[in-house]
Length: 69
Image (cartoon, rainbow, N blue to C red; front, side, top):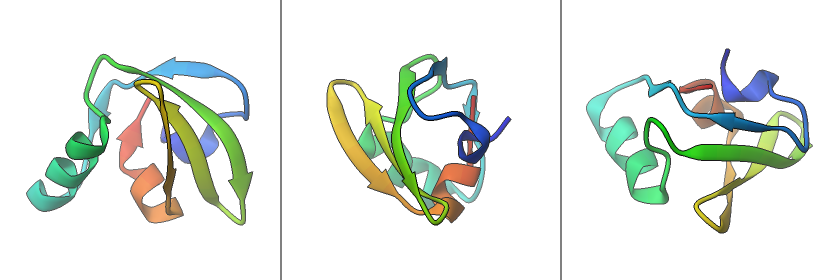
């Protein structure tokens, strides 16, 4: 399922990152790589704040749709 469907407070393992090469590279630079753990801290209007690799990152709904957990 995409990260946008994840409940706040639950932890998931990233299965894969979809989208164009530049989008995948951008997310990888933020720490979103297959096999790493991610949890949703909060969600506002579809945009999410996530905890990944001991840091919190805010990403848009469109970017969160590309992260499959």
